[in-house]
Image (cartoon, rainbow, N blue to C red):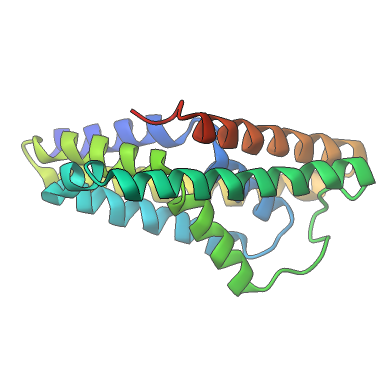
Length: 202
């Protein structure tokens, strides 16, 4: 079981640590101190559920739903492009990210945006349900693999929220905040373009 647990921990960590739309969104919410822990928890919980579905053998079924994956691809690209435009607009208008600043966002709006960033990206399903599910299903202990993957996901997202909270008051220069917002906008725009062009699809 321990070997399966270690495989799940390391493989999942390798997939989610790469900076992408989900990580950029968690970082943005954490730096703005707007429902950061809820956002991190929702992202981790979604990963947990999707990996669990994959380990149970639903990965192949999900991968075969071409119409569903196509709809998610375009909806995800549109949503991420909108978020990128908002980030670029803040940079150009001088309204950069600020620790605890900006328009106060309700927890319902934050929850909806988090679910959209997470679930409207077909790559999430390919990585969690299909890839991790297929690997986990053939482990000596699928349960151990699932636990390891879940620990990696929870550790990463909550660690990202905690690190951003520690960094926020130390980033007092408005130019730094605009640079962060610019980087987030570029990441979101890049992922949106890759989704729209089909580069992230098998």
